[in-house]
Image (cartoon, rainbow, N blue to C red; front, top):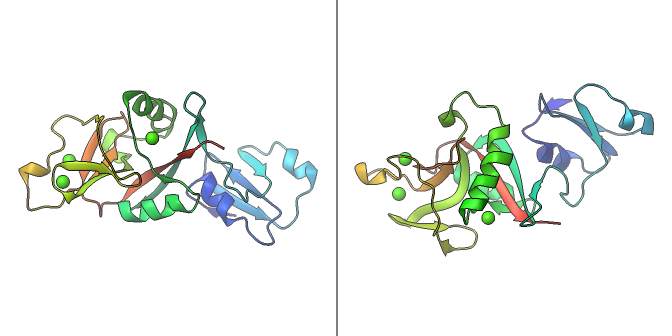
Length: 195
Ligand SMILES: [Ca+2]
Ligand SMILES: [Ca+2]
Ligand SMILES: [Ca+2]
């Protein structure tokens, strides 16, 4: 049993020799099992849910039934570049928020479900950035210019200190965006097409 960052991380760790795994949602604990009696899989040990191995990355995704898009939040705090890499492992990409509907859905169904003591404590990386040209924001994975935006008050504010590189976009607990140095350590949200 060990501490993990998300159900997905736990599922990814259940490889050769792992017959099933358990995940404790409240405490983010992961258990890999070399054998699984069906009684164990069904038992109601408080907080634990058991799963069969997930070779295709099917669990741990929260899907929007209207759009068919799925999202997975990871609470590990990493740089934006590392977040991008991590999303790739499940054939997904760092989230790209294309319109208000998507922004609202993510805020309501994902960001607001995570405990945060203040909006600035739980910023989450998106795939948006202006690394190439200051002030010109693009979505990294699709390489498209960002159209819809939901900037928080006084952001983006890189222009105030132009010598600093503040080139990546994170989304705050309330769904508003902020420009932040890409080397900052944030949780992150992966997105992919539905199954
Ligand atoms: Ca999207
Ligand atoms: Ca910038
Ligand atoms: Ca900012």
